[in-house]
Length: 183
Length: 208
Image 1 (tube, each protein chain N blue to C red):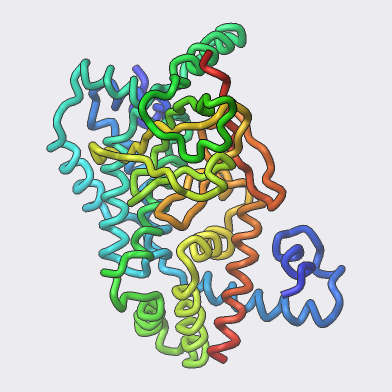
Image 2 (cartoon, each protein chain N blue to C red):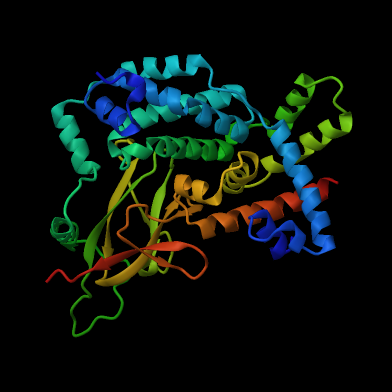
């Protein structure tokens, strides 16, 4: 008998669609950290990141039957989460929650010996990132903060590499302009 | 920022190939990116999220056989078929999707020849966009204006609508939330738009 940990994504998807709801837990465990890390970096708020991840997984469960490539369900779940993150960034109720605050929190949590200038730089760069469009911010985070390749990102975000490069280039230009403004 | 610097940051040009002034800019950029990475929020998913997800889906109603069948019709899953069978299936889909227009005014009737209205056929557009607030279709048949919106009446994240299109080969894209242009991930054909993006391609035959 095959143990649960050996089940492929496609097998898990099939099992869930056949009525084994508990099998969905495997997908939550496999992709939870990746989704949560991205949500944290996009929102800068642990509570909101957790909320978005939970909503993405629940939405994924509801829509699992429409996942056209069950062996790539992780990328499909990530796309749902990424869309939630962009919606969150556009949401007016977001108020004053910003990466600037995250950077401030990180500064206070970090090693006391860290120099104030370095912390100030971090505060400034995360604040600038928060000022990009959600699409630019997402592209920048995936490429430069999460260190993914263009091919990986294009596959996950369903964009051509050329479109993605253009988006990253614009993000760099915008970020450079913002940081020069702040300097 | 110079194009050469972008190309270096994209991994296309080695650092040594850059002139001195560009290397200075790249060094500054690398320091900034390092700062981003060092200060990026990290952390695995807290276990209570898994518990929350499983508790929430436990409250959802079971999907019965009828529900699964209905779901399949709305979101047909891919099946493995031979190339010959694929051709037959594709032909069937075209016949099923392209219906003669009745009682709906076409978006741009254009010139009328001999008193006969220009023929349009109605094409079913479908996009899964769970978090979208609106989805519209823009194509050469709308002068690239997102003038036809799709509906998600049951709130399941699948947006659909029938849109009148003249016979011919057309390029189109979806517009999410009035701002984000998206290539149809399920189109059978694509064409480069000349600006680095891909348009989905739709071939519409005459209904007669």
